[in-house]
Length: 184
Image (tube, rainbow, N blue to C red; front, side, top):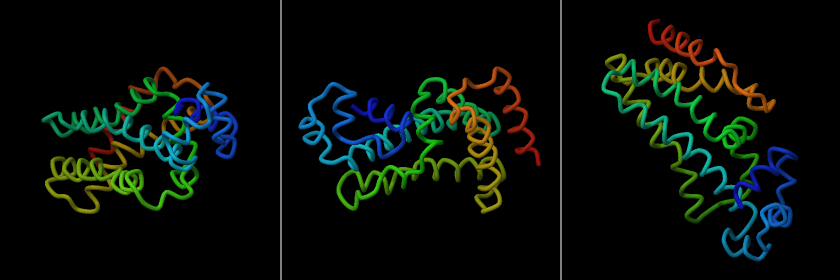
């Protein structure tokens, strides 16, 4: 059901993913969608959460490397791996803002999940900044984010939006760019 919703969103935009259209695309009865998710907003929120959690899982795992520079490099490259493993989720995350998909999920478990969704990555980035630069200052966090998040997502964004495969030379080029940012 979530995959069908994602495909509708990517093909035709956020308003195309009605409960009826998702039911038709997934082969599930409309009533089952409402029973499982409650509303379109809840379904889209769960879709967003799933995509973010998938992207964060390998990113955070890569940060476990004891060598801080290798952890930074591995986390940046994990974004390319995520794009290869879950291209639809990667496209979703670069094509839509959370606010584009989630209009009203004011309370409940999904709202709580959304509110805390980036907390594990924020903590991991802060820890990596401290490991890399000896402190968790704003400047250290910004440099760490540039190397591990901004560069990789910037490198893949236009390819994902266009639905094009990632260029073959992207991995070594990104590794060099990450290294340069970490050195400055």
